[in-house]
Length: 255
Image (cartoon, rainbow, N blue to C red; front, side, top):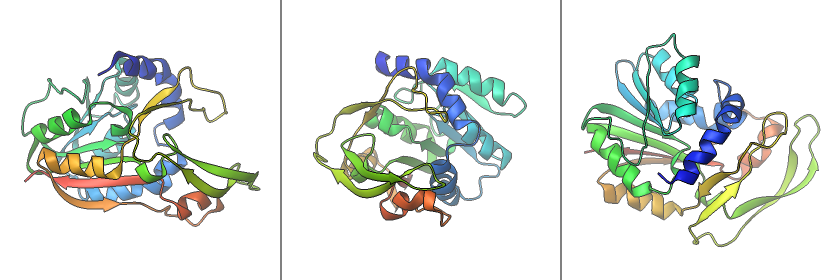
């Protein structure tokens, strides 16, 4: 994978781990994770690849549900943090690039989970080919991205109004997007829970929905479901996410 991407994640590893904090952000917990859990189904006894595991919290979640999990990430710092944080659990964490999963053998996983990773890499085609290779026939790929049609880390943005009382978020007036079909890299500076900027910007690669779906099909997968999950709670904090989907989730089978 491109060296500047690795440099970003190595520089931001500590800040990212603090932001996720073993449980994810509110958007993870109340929108994305419930959807992924439903698609994963009963994982007891299943062998799962957590592809781009970050600081490892989903590896922990599915290990505690009875799965045999291997977590891989190309950031040595994030893998070291995962190994330390979840040392009491039987999780195998490996430094590996999802564009070229050399340490992993063919046809060994029941599920490949790739959560909010494909939008941060250049090698969409190679990563999907590697996921197909390591999945057993009948196995599933489940991946999520920030919704390409409403991509706040790409060509889209909310036009915001005043801050809403008791939520800390500003009111969404309407969503603006242009140049949806222009697929390119954007760089965004994330903020910590305290509002401080991360050490470096992150790269995000905007792609259309059709690019993601067609690449899945061209790789040989059978597309089984697309989800645009809504928040599971009726709270003012998630007003914007009830109006426009924040995430797109895909499940596909290796025949």
